[in-house]
Length: 191
Image (cartoon, rainbow, N blue to C red; front, side, top):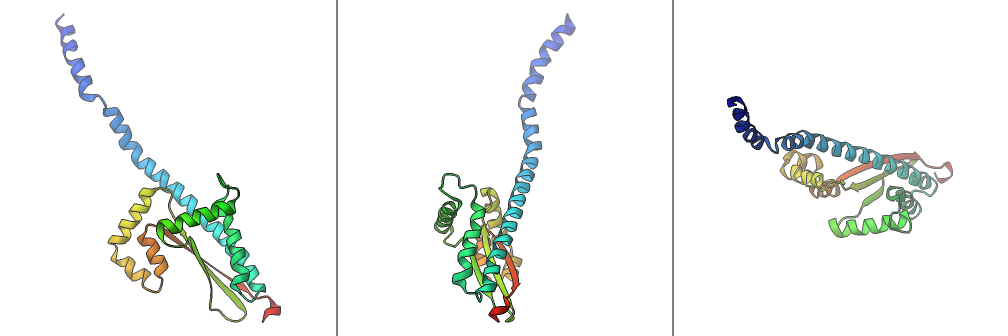
């Protein structure tokens, strides 16, 4: 009887002390896994966006090679090609409508355009295009983290210098500037 009384006394106390410990341990184990998984998703998304940017800039460069690198010829092609980033259309009528709405919301939120494309000086036989796309991470915590890291980093100021103000401002806002360049030989009839 004495042994039965002993277990009866200590068992409830032991359960009360450990209540919630399994949940806490599970959360502590899952938190790093969830952070790593969300970073992997963000990296995969960034890789996909960069690939689509390269394809879009290639398409614009082909048009620029034929039309003397005239911005009125290749920039609409680039704009149309960038609509692939915004497919599926979701609640919008088309990827183009989603692109326009997203870029307008981006301008209002950050006071910056979604992208900036220019033809850089190059030898007469080539065309050199540069596209800077400002990528916003899916997770707000990642954008916040980027803002804090850039805000604390003095090395960042030295590497991003005054020659690239758009990129420096994008990093300051927690955006990731994706810079894509493409060179193409001019069409022979345009020399």
